[in-house]
Length: 98
View 1 (cartoon, one colour):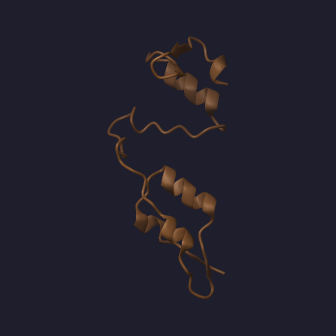
View 2 (cartoon, one colour; view 1 turned 135 degrees about the vertical axis):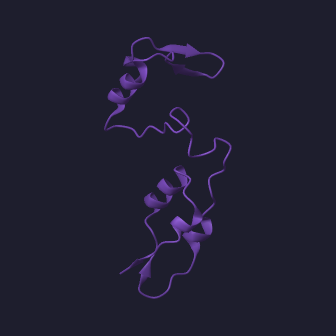
């Protein structure tokens, strides 16, 4: 899909393809990947909500903790999504009743 974008160039410095920053390219990217990929644009539009230097919170103890009777752990896919989006540990302190 990336190779099909018009005006695509290669960066030897970063080892990846890129498009020049011009008015039509963001919409082109959004339309190309709509329904296929989630695009994190926090660094490009307005004030970024997440610092680029911010480390994703470690939540292994949430995965391994013992749960009270009648409760089960959050699904792993959900925890991974929260890590990628760098939500706070309080958000991850979830469990579901059976």
